[in-house]
Image (cartoon, rainbow, N blue to C red; front, side, top):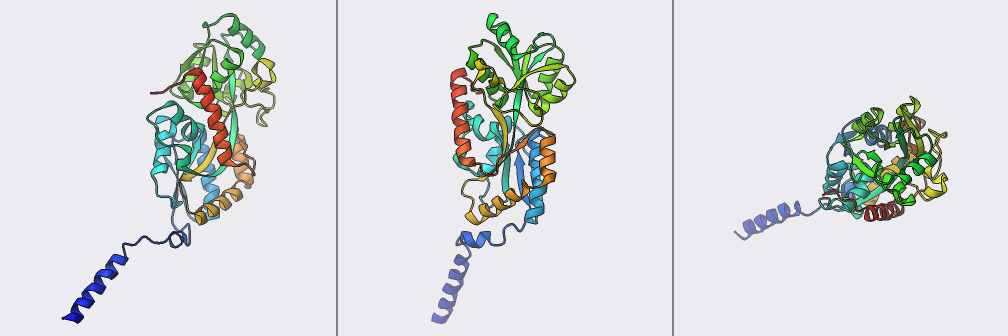
Length: 327
């Protein structure tokens, strides 16, 4: 009987040992050994989606497993970002995100609970400026004319963006703040309806991401007044930065895209991802696709965590000054 009890106890202990968490080193051995999902917080076809798919293709070649895109739209990208925050930190669920969902959303919406510390930064992919444009109806052809007209007619003119609390909205408010302009912000549900109203002369001014605005600028249907980054874009070097005008000195804001994971990614997984990421950015095919879409590849030595903190401080200053909320 004693022998039988000993055997039973041994069996119970053996079964309990199966419940002990596997050490992190064991979990990351052989990573990756199954498909990786990159979440994009927008429907297919936009700039973030294009950036994510281009990167996924290159990562798959270097990691040796499929890297697939999952589009999780809603709340300006925040629903997709929240999904990644909630995911297991095992390296199999990542985010290709932009300013809105990574840094801005939580500053303008109490419903967004996650913070930057809830992500593991992996790498900055690329960025592109936004562009301030004028409709044909406005008759404005230069940034000097724009500033003069709006300054002399406070409250008469409006500008459109792709929505409240977006990077485009913040760019417009930064321009207003620099020269003390009084303009009404008109939020649209995306870039397409904004473009329709600008081309239809239903609104005077608007802010586009450069890649979205260029076709309309090149066709002559709207006039580019300046880009929102302090340096010229290699994609459109003929469009001067708004900051070249002394009244708008300091205007420097763009749209950027980054690869992020959930917080607490194991170091071996993070190191593997960073290596594959750095190699992917060296791909001529990736570079061409992103540059053709209006983006400029990020510098290889950028400290993403430091960059995100600086960007968040910039956004908070604009949001607080303009009292932007998206309840």
